[in-house]
Image (tube, rainbow, N blue to C red):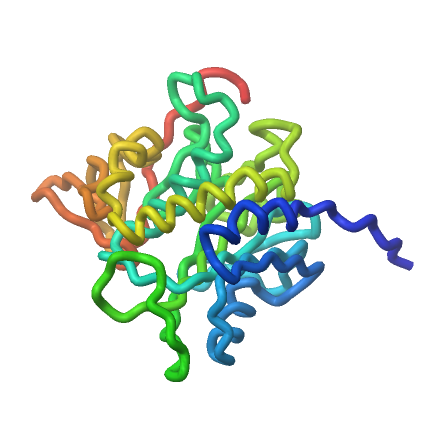
Length: 287
């Protein structure tokens, strides 16, 4: 017989009090289990529900990552949530970088460190600087239902869309997933043993909302310098899924990755290639 575990003390009311003034109609919903928080919000949008929301799941049975990859989890191992809201940004380019950057900054426990331990692997994965993956984000958008009237947040002149920002972050070491993953993994408790999923959510979500709203009004350019400080790939030799390789030179004001190949200087757009570092430096000291 499975023994029921005590309910997780999620900071739902505190999050609502902090975020609702910025996102009118905002709600916080916590579920013990769901197929996928992104999929659930997509179903709701198609049913006409477009109010801002964060949907948190303690367990997902069909979690998804970028390019259709499965997100492995056991209850309590991961923080899994999707933030949904209507956006009409000046330019969509760079949103995934802003999301990864915002989360990395929120989870940084030692702001005085010469080099932040948590960085962003373009376009949105959270890595430690020794090459281990901490988490990732899947961003999806949907057209608003025809009967829905919402201008959305942002300074864009185009058509507003409902954006779903789904993130999975390892809190404890994933159980039994090592052989199934091509990239070594890590967890928040490797960075700071005091991290829990509720504490991480409370730290990162208000800032994430602020940064997404700033992005919607001003684009990626105001974040470029901050991103450079946490750019895992900058200066690394990387190769692309099309077989080419080169040195990552950082990102442009629109979030485009710049790559110096043997033949030319190449711009890489989010979504058209998979970028993996060829070699990551070993940590200077044991973690």
